[in-house]
Amino acid sequence: MSERVLLSWSGGKDSSLTLAELLADPTRSVAALLTTVTEGYDRISMHGVRRTLLLQQADALGLPLNVVTIPQRATNAVYESAMEAAFDRFRAEESRPLRSAICFWPTCAATGKPGWPGWG
Image (cartoon, rainbow, N blue to C red; front, top):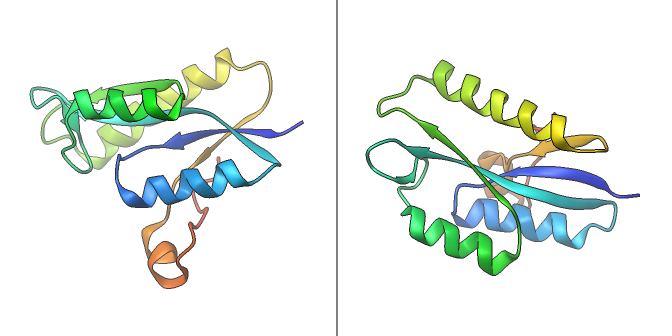
């Protein structure tokens, strides 16, 4: 049985590389994408990608998408709290254990491969 992963999705190349690594790993399966969208802008908080493109990305990948809306100028504490609550809700709906994955950019840049400090 593969380990289910909820992937933190920014819509950028690093999260795409992380997804490719996860999809190539037979011991893991991607349960869904998780991203934040900033209220009022309707764009991914990290890169400013429009929600319409975000929806097209998830559709093209054939993966469920979980969107967390955060306020403009959200503090890191607000962001972390919103993401943790979303992860907890998703984990409660899963019938088997679930982990989270993020691409740790310095590891990606140094090695060309995603790093996994965000396993949770």
